[in-house]
Length: 106
Image 1 (cartoon, rainbow, N blue to C red):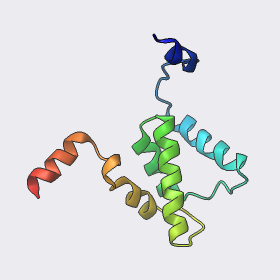
Image 2: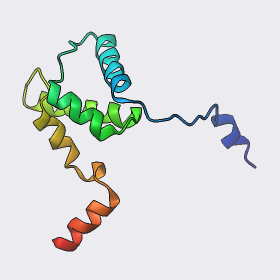
Image 3: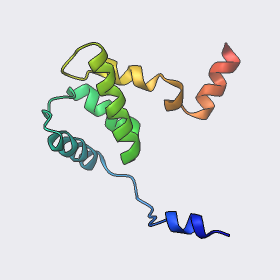
Image 4: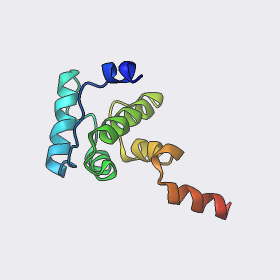
């Protein structure tokens, strides 16, 4: 009965959160792999992305992508802390407790 499910599961692993230096290296490596400048994110934006993603590669990648989209909407070549904050205020980036508190106060 689980044949279909078993055929889709290939591998699973638990990754520990990365430290700040590894997160920054990850972002730089990803930028280099797509031939973008390592200065695509200003210092403040990079620091906020690293802090907000808490060592999680998927969160980091999604936050970088969302921030790049925000910058592109404004036709900017460099992602600033404002672009990152615009992504972070979206509901899916907030914690469950924060969303409940906001609903109660509204």
